[in-house]
Length: 68
Image (cartoon, rainbow, N blue to C red; front, side):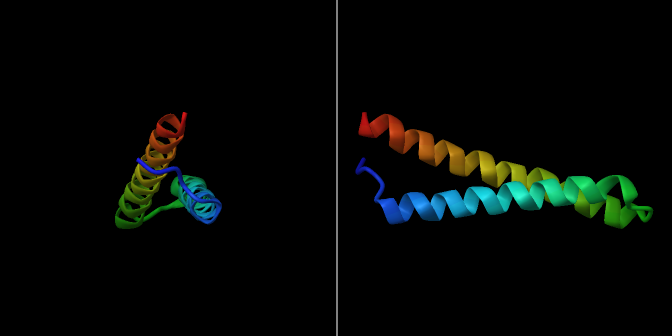
């Protein structure tokens, strides 16, 4: 596995930040949702953005381990 370039690492950093922000924003809005369908959507969105964040972290960790 090749080491990630600086550009790729910066891109991953941006993606991680975006996913974390989206998950946090949806989690903050979740308790205020009064309609069941909106509540379900936000709950799903939190889980999905957290899953994507975790997946990106896994990719980053895999590449870091391969570089050492």
